[in-house]
Amino acid sequence: MTTAVDRFVTVAQIGQLAPGDILAIEVAGRAIVLYRDGDHYFAAQRRCLHQGGDLADGIVSRGHLVCPVHGWRFHVATGALAASPETCLATYAVRVTGTEIQIDPTPVHAAGRGGPL
Ligand code: FES
Image 1: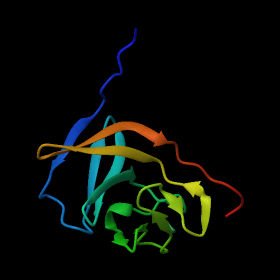
Image 2 (image 1 turned 30 degrees about the horizontal axis):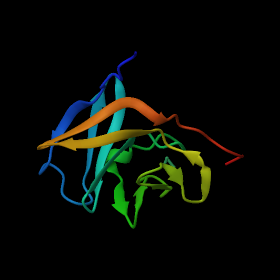
Image 3 (image 1 turned 180 degrees about the horizontal axis):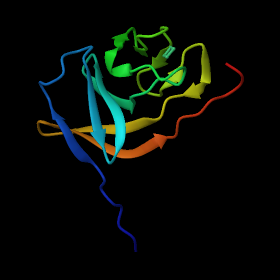
């Protein structure tokens, strides 16, 4: 019998992020953004798939994480690019335990690009 390994690590406390806030963090050597949309927390790779814009300087708007450089919009939960959903940011599982926000630094899915951009 195997036991599932719990990889979640605490990265912030609830109350640190208001709705719409984005926090740059590093977990297990990975540059990640933790962000809040409404009452839900999400995490994705920090660098934009287009030209590496810093998503920590972006905004959360209408269900999307928006890059500050050229405005590419990624779905808050799936990381999918609105204009081309097969193109996705790497995303990470987030959970709240007590007052702690925790991330599993193993990507839910790796970043990927679909057709030509
Ligand atoms: S670098 Fe993000 S949209 Fe261009």
